[in-house]
Length: 329
Image (cartoon, rainbow, N blue to C red; front, side, top):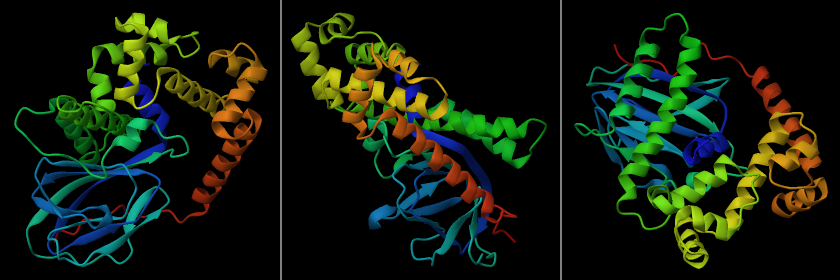
């Protein structure tokens, strides 16, 4: 897999969900803090985003996309001073605690959704994203993102045979295109960070090699040769742009791969060690404990127990009869 695909796979967990919501002013909703990330797309009309941490309200127009990756409390409303009604999670849906009556003012049509993210070992790309990623509508910009929005909106508006399979796939595609669009917008002016790393041919080549084959016995000199740089020049450039030395990132990614294998497969530790780049279980277990503070077995048992607990909790929650409801007369 390539670096961005791997980063998304490392972040994402569970099943994403979404809904189309039509609101007539006055209306306002407040989303609670969560472990996930939310997105909102204005399909028609306009509204205001009241961002996390009390930032300045952000005006959104038709075609605008916002992505909130850090999980803080935020609001959406027809106007910055409209009272916000709490939105709560019930099962796989978001619902208003006390839905306000539909107003008679201007109508806004929203496409809203959320992703579950693993924050135990977040990919550095996730930590680098701002609290609010705002992708304003611009003619000719981010055409793939616009196409994904149109497809997802169409499936939600008029579900057909296969929609239950199409919608999660389109949500994953939408997340990819949101991140691509943000990276593209920042790559030209960024000198450090992941937007700069993926736009730098030398660093991107080394990162792709690590992600394609994390078990390979990579050295700084070998990665430098792939990048077309001397060992010293490559080490300096990688550390400056990515934020950590090449072998430190390699170890971090190997442990991320190992954690995913421990969580999602029954592979014995010998196999997990080999696929993570270690020749022996002992060396692997020592590196794993140093990096994560626990043994591979403890990690596997803990992750499975947490998953079972989460499934049980979700099974006991009341199912929502309705997603965030329309507030149009």
